[in-house]
Image (cartoon, rainbow, N blue to C red; front, side, top):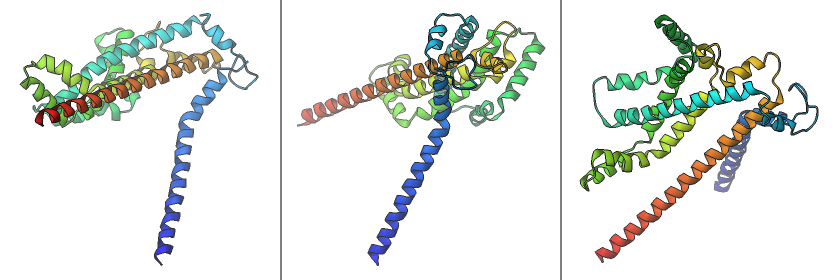
Length: 290
């Protein structure tokens, strides 16, 4: 009887594992098949990406001939906005995350709840509201307005990500640092920042991706002469997207993947080094006690 029950549980466990694997494959397929199709059509030997007409690498050659200047200008404009919004968002995110996690002040709960508003509210609502404000006070649309718009939805993600990375161990290390003679600024740069660096890195990647991928805010707050890459691709979609756009976005995906793997490798190497140094210090302390 026990064997029957055990075999039945084993079969259920195996069936659940198979269903879980199938579910995971479906989810990953939904995520990555569009990316694979985009990469595949970057080698399409056709002027428009409607049908596959043969393999070619000419679009990558033409891409670096800089014949499509609008595409490169839009990319440069998008990168400038993304880098600036990432720097601003991460800086405010570090200060805001530490402030909300460590300090007590009036309206702390209210401010903590208000951070989620730009995430919850639909982006089109935020974009229209900001457009009305800029038009009312007479601010000219352009780089500044787009940058403000991107920071409004990047900062909350940065604050939440960095705040979640701060733990009780950070306070213990900070107290130990100050007991050993370091001032607050030295403790901040040498203890606080390194301990929350994984959160800073994650928030930077997230803010950069959200900014460079944004369409709604960029389209609403852009000036007449500026266009980000997503807005340009959206306008090209009406007449048909050429494979050189696929080639450019393929290179962007490859760059982000390499950057992510590099940062991950650096973090692993740092973690191994810290673990080794901790083991050596424990060994020295144990030897001294003997």
